[in-house]
Amino acid sequence: MRKTIRAGVAMCLFAMATAAMATTPERYLHVRVEDQSKGESVSVNLPLSMAEKILPTVNHGNLHQGRVTMTHGEIEGVDLHAILDALRSAADGEFVTVKQTDQDVRVAKSNGNLVVHVRDSQKEGQKVDITVPLKVVDALFSTAKQDELDILAAIRALGEAGETILVTVEDATEHVRIWVDSRADQGK
Amino acid sequence: MILLGKIGLALAGTAVAGMGILFSEGTVVVNVTERQPESHHVYVIAPAMLVPVAVHFAPKDQLAHASKQMRPYLSAIRAAIGQLRECDDLTLVEVKEPGNHVLIKKGGGSLIVDVDDEGETVHISTPLRAISSAIEEIAAVTPSDES
Image (cartoon, rainbow over all chains, first blue to last red; front, top):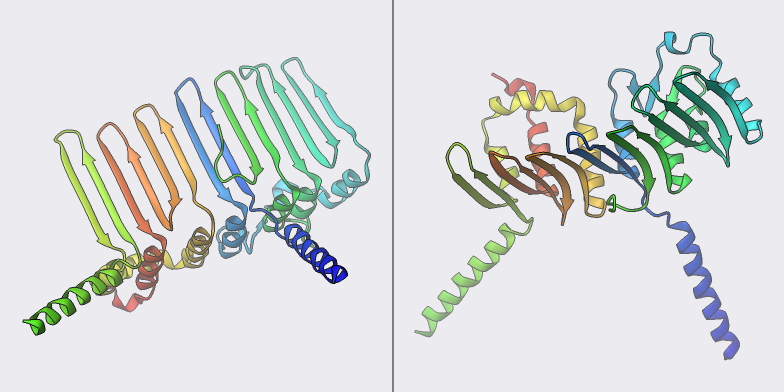
């Protein structure tokens, strides 16, 4: 009798654990723009599942079936897939460092993320930090066509990547933040 | 006397049931307060079920142009409403400026728009199901109905 109860409890725990693992929490893309000098702020919250459903239905301009076709002028002579392959296989570290009198640019790979830092002393000390999980970059370029970006696949990858801050832009008065988390609101 | 009572009870029951059905899809609330140049207050509360019915009986030639403009985006609108109905309550967009505040959110199965500026305050709350039904009614209008 005890064995039967134990087996039943074990099965229940297993079923609960499986269900918990299978349920991916809803992820939200948040955008917050604040301009302290004008006292303005804009907040946008979008469930990624909604973006996933809407995007394939939009066929307008360069956007079709969740993919964007880049014009040839933008990528002419650049093998994006080869660059991505090189990036994927490279070890963590800084790839590009540009130091000028008024601007520093750093591009690096760190903990599975592509990281870009820009510091511009001319634009009121503007700081731009971009962190994109490489899985998202992979998904973005996952189409067979060289001149296409798969936005839909990137959004799916973003949902699976977990909570992450994608972009922050800061200068003396403006503050822009784009991030993904599992909270419907932006918190305080 | 008993018969009259029974008839009265039946009528009251029918009225309550009718109201229940009428309000079963929620209510559309429009609340507009104008402060400048003159103070006006408009408050409308209506059963959401009447929205698609009203659209259905609206002049087709008036709706044909809207239908034509909406058609390319219809599948995107359907997808958006479908997802909004499934997702939790949330603030979609909030814009704050000195003297202006715009809020678009989903709350309790309704899409809520709040605008508060120096001249007026506007609050509109419409059940998503009613929006969906109204859009389908507009989409059903064919271009041949356009005069």
